Image (spheres, rainbow, N blue to C red):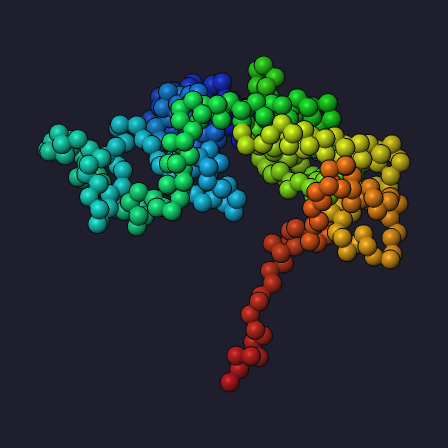
Length: 326
């Protein structure tokens, strides 16, 4: 399986060669369509040599990406895999094939057709109309424009932040695809700051942190898509640059390595209005690091928690065994 553009945020220049090598050795290529928002209107997976490709409707076609999905969308195959598409026990799907294919006694369709893989033969009737409307309203030109803007936005962020945060992967021309990976690993050595600290501090600035430590540990993957305005992109970049300045204070010995703005983030309203304040920076810097946070402040509901505790320490919510005794 291959993802194009890759999850590293670059267009793999050797994608056609990769597919050709797999085919030479009798293999098939399954292309992950997760990043189709960098392809629509510009290129086609089949042209690269992919044999199968699923088209995620989330992100690319207007369906929310949060909560792990919903994972729904069409799966396209090359003609030689057509006989192996799923069938259905209730709905007749033979219209997928031509009459000659069905009537041909040598056809493999009837013999290789597998059973249903879902009760709904064409997917979710509540989700698919949303994507259909989006495609119909955008049109070919609009969808192509969305792809171009998604790539442009990612490169804008990469260029604005490259002097403060190394961009882990770039293409041959120094550009990225639809997302960029910011390398934060050096700050652990220079300031004792890790990726989680920067992610938590972003909450004080009013941002939900980007994907952290994936696909590379100690990094953040920023994917703005086409939907963010330049004003919002600048606001995010300004926040990241300001956080870099806060890290620099630690590096230069102006702030403590353990008791600082990042290690204590996010700062809740409860902490800030309490009578006791024993931190070496002001409440104002903690809560309102930028002018826009005074105008539209997002307050975190809770402070720092151990993100991995629940994974490493299983907690049973059941009643104690005594409660089941007769």
